[in-house]
Length: 526
Image (cartoon, rainbow, N blue to C red):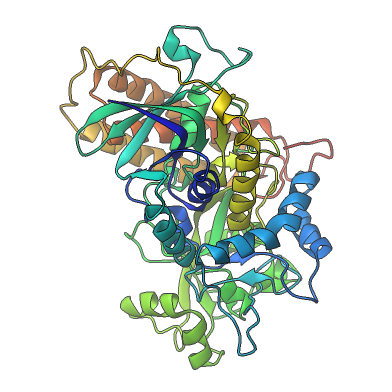
């Protein structure tokens, strides 16, 4: 089947939905959700959304904090844009129904997180992402100009390549005409033609064994754009959240928000001793990359599988009030956080790189925009400041809408795109060919491309992924397309890019730390 929409949004988090809401007044919008609208990384963002909203804070402080966390690789113009435009986008979220917590005087009840010099994190208890997601979903589903396609998995973006032309990274004027999308309920591959396409597929956490990301985070959009010869950058900067709940066998790992450290939580070794002061004068409030490396060092040096986060010294009623979701989740595992220390370990959490976009959210491919975790705007540089990602998504959704709305009607539908050709393919006889390779990718990435890296580890990872790449591409060419094999193909592609860009960076900076080049290169760029 062929669908035609003015705007095609691939992905169902805050990045895609906020863009859809901003353009839907002017044209027809399709949202393709891999599972359902509810299943996105936004939903799991506990901490909150950063913005200057109180009189003792200011834009200069927020900018300075972001630049400091970014390790000297942030795009200053982008940082200024996001910080200055954040308050207006907060007001828009509120108009869409988002309910941020307030104090007894009616002011925002602001949190402070690691790396922030002021209390500026707006939140809804400890499930801010879920509050934002639910509010946007209700607005989306009630909008007459938006059609939601649940359980639709994007396979490839459409370019001149699908018209029989040779497209390379040096081809000028590559254009996006929409996407081939698998209807998972009918197993048919439909052609979605669009004047403008927004890629908002989220992160890559599932390329690692341990991650806080939902299991849909397989880097699909980044892999698709890379295959379409779009520019990808900053993939070496993978943020590991320092405090995921340690509970072996559970995937994804449950996130213990950084706001808990801002609240007064203290990191301790298994014998109950504090240790963060050895690594940073800010102690447990240091930025994530420093905390994650410190925990990794303590665990590996002493053979621990986890450490502890301690809030038992805080008022129990306040703890339960501020962190009800965490309290209930831990209690379900027999941990009363008001009395027991929380076992934690780092887990893959957020990608600072991705599809390169400009100030308008445009990719290097015409008519294709990217937003959210799959995009590299330059805001985060070498390390993301806590709670900057949600506000980045709504600010760049607004930028992309402002840029695409005046021009989208001038883009024709490309009617010559052929239907997906499945001739000669068969269903894989053994699913183990897919599941075992998927498992191997996670083991390779976690063992060799984690918080601390080396040239030897990276080369070993690359050699092993190359074998998996060849096997998987051969299987893909022979197989009826399924979500399983596409996800495997995507995590291999994304893992390869993480490794190659990590190998190219001959320094340690932000989230990329290598024992072979422990210092910074003063001439490095993102």
